[in-house]
Length: 304
Image 1 (cartoon, helix red, strand yellow):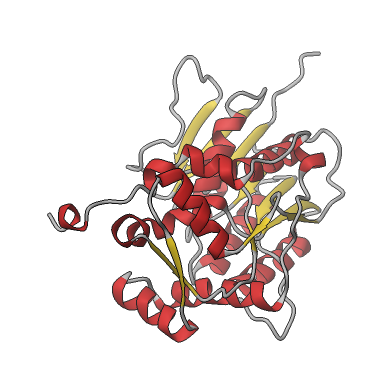
Image 2 (cartoon, helix red, strand yellow):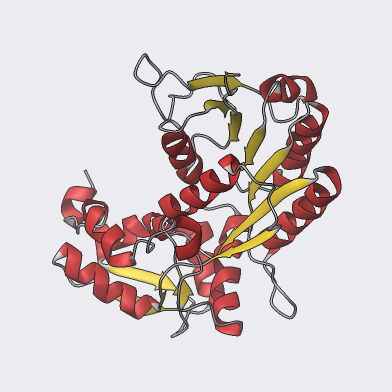
């Protein structure tokens, strides 16, 4: 009897991790259905005769009917939506739709569990979703990375124009993981032939790095002097909301992550070698590949 290929639904398919999940699944023996919030959004991975197994649907994350249609016939689901104050409501809606559609497995991109007195509001959102997931789906796994290497792309403006990194991290270290390695873990769990036993998995990259060390690494790959400027949390909040125009909740999140790393040392070695069956990418690899994003620009040119 011919084996039926599994169908994997990917929410967040246009995001940093979701796009890579789609790309990796495209070369696997499965059917992949990416869910777009905006039907006009460009496809993160192209479709065509050479990629026979990739399709897309669009769905409003507040519409239970559209979400159930997106999940029809799926065997497993990758759960990821944009970080926002609506995240709990939207991901709970997806979990409900998946359960009602008969989805047996959910792999969720979550966040580290934060213990008091440290506080990270976004982690509290994830905790609520994770708890709901555990009550709703028998087979699930929550992936918990600390921070992505690709998040450094948020700092491109100040690095390109002023050669400076601003933060409130002091000399504490942060652990970074490449989103491609996170996607590999997710894909392996989505396609596992055995029942998932791990309900919660900490994903740590190969090293913990200070912002001063990051400035030195960026200086090396860009050929320009990059400096880390340590400021107070209040000063950083003012910069993020005033000059960078970030919403208050996102500015607070960035500051809370720095504070968490100060209070609770992050891992200084990886936890994923056994999960991806190879050594994870190191920060220097990512920076070498992405150095064009951080190259210094003439301030005069940037004004025109």
